[in-house]
Image (cartoon, rainbow, N blue to C red; front, top):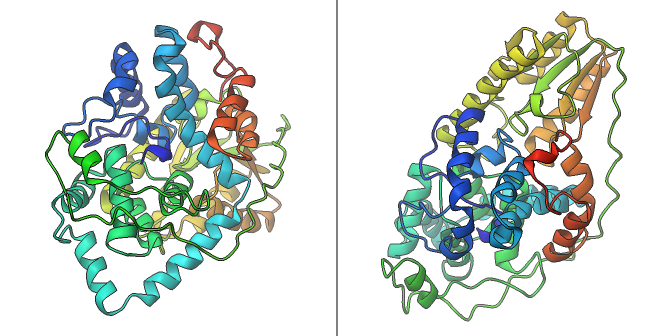
Length: 420
């Protein structure tokens, strides 16, 4: 969805490596000034967008690298739309970091909504996720999502709106369907984007798909005139405390403790971070097969994550000059605990993992490592420490906060910004 801050998506992802992500960025940069004019056209093969989002999602490439690259090549005003779309992803992450209970509420409601499926709603749900709703546009997008791990931003918004307001299905199940299949899906941008479409994020302000808009931006490929509920009211929910918390302080690493480096699929460029000059005894990473108990990730999503982790382990092994270790996927917690003990380290360091299942897994690991006198330290990137605290209100105040932080004030590659 546009509100997910996805500046472009891969119809079929290439290899999940940093080198491929950087090559995609390099190929997009010469055309970045055309992005604002061409990005809304939701017609395959979707070559009007950057196709960077799966790589940004796992931080195979960094938001800061994408912003710097386009600003290095073009006047700011000509690429401001692209920069803003990169910032949407950071905004959503920051917003959820300041209100982590919204993620917990989502998971609780998702379980209730799954348990509550019955009768006609159960049939509508089964037809919707199979691409058999009877609405040509919706069914084509459902199949495209399943087959490619991709949907254009406009199609994401239309799909979510039709799911909620025309098919009358629980928004939580739609968000889970997206998170299961999207190669660039993450808890913050996905959950909060669906809440925004439903009218829950900004109370009373929802997004209604309109047949005229769909026909226009699909070049007439679809025209669902008379099929959509274009008058539906926004959803409501019990009151939810949205007052932002204070972001916990970033941890400063001591230099004299034997340490191991742990990689998760949330951030896979440790050599381009504040950790780049640190010394480690070893590096480990791996997928966790039990992670998707509620979210049930599709095989292509898992495979992309696995491949990205493998690429990051190879890069980290070369950069830090240590042995890498692929963790056992069937019992990730026990495997990580055993790895840390075998290394005889006093500390396991990982790049900060935002709100979501991997954050929950790290909290469990923290308790297990503490039993052996090993600390788990989560190191937050400069980008996140600077920008997340600005996500206290809406996106546009956040964007001004980002500009005041000087991340976007004429940033160029030649300025050699601080890692992270």
